[in-house]
Length: 112
Length: 110
Image (tube, rainbow over all chains, first blue to last red; front, top):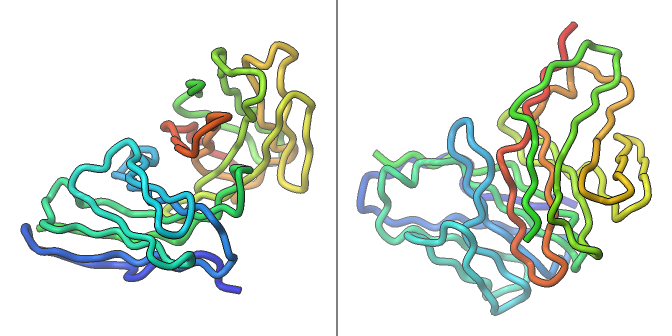
């Protein structure tokens, strides 16, 4: 039982490049979340999903797109990366309306 | 959504109890208080949650005031491994936006 797995763990991009972060959970959780964390800061919610085929905007959605085509996967896309998107990205999931989140280990993204 | 206020940082001596406060004066009747912690560079970890009664598990105790406007997370015998950022959040009763604040940096010192 792996829990929440994020791929890749590290990535360096040039400004304007695109990429996708993958979050996979094997716990059959309904809800999934993407957060970003800048150095010395707390977590900020980017997008979230309340079930397969659904997505919703969080606090800082601009510059990101998401998709939840399969229940176990939540993809975070950057269409045209900017240096301001340099951050550590965390994915999380929860089973139901109780707010017990399980987090992944994070993906560190650097945009040059 | 109920806003939470936590001190920026706290120190605690190893082996002593760590008491981390959180103010949530705008909490509504059916909103729970949740606590998470984030050890350096790792993903946050759920600790405990409660509605109005005090709660205890293997990690910590949660004391919620009678008026529910504040709470305290208690680590009864802090160790160096408890050094982390501790987040207190009050998710909305309806809706699924889970927002974290800046949290409290707890430094446990030997």
